[in-house]
Image (cartoon, rainbow over all chains, first blue to last red; front, top):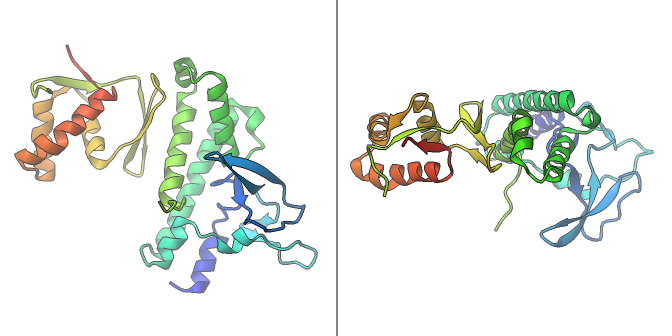
Length: 177
Length: 92
């Protein structure tokens, strides 16, 4: 593992910033963030936290463009965050080539899932993968989680769950207990 | 108590997706999602046609080189969970 290939992994991925894996990114306590980042307060386990919405507008083809002089200061989380895959790569638990293969596979899966959702719910077309899945869950909730809805949209729900399962398995860092 | 001569079959109300050798399932009935471990995956694949629990145990024991104790104390409770979750159904 070296820093150059670690950066290479990130610039071939971009999944943590483009809304595929996450809806939002944390704002650190006491951090003042530029108004160009659309922020919101969300509630997790009854605790409120400040976040900014993803996809990030400063991402361009998997590369962060925030370093130009007119851009605002980069949020702290951007430098701090390391997905599970990157952590495994740093710990020599996965090779560079395996990491790239996994990223490609994830992009394929996400595209497949996006296409399925877009075909059935065109109104969600403009949303990122993660927000599409959230919107799908909302639809299920509005339908009172009825079996009829699950039967009608079973293929999409299963595909979205499969993607979530995959995302958690390979990218989401488990919280320390 | 689970009877080993009990015939089991797949619940057709379970939707299945395979991803890189891993099986992910969703119950249409109750909306629960399951990520199957290799044993669950193997059992599900064996049950393309209905089988007795005894048959399942023999095949699992041969494939994974399991002792009688392991079948009794680990596999049987797992099969019972799959039945309780209505992933597998008992034939009357």
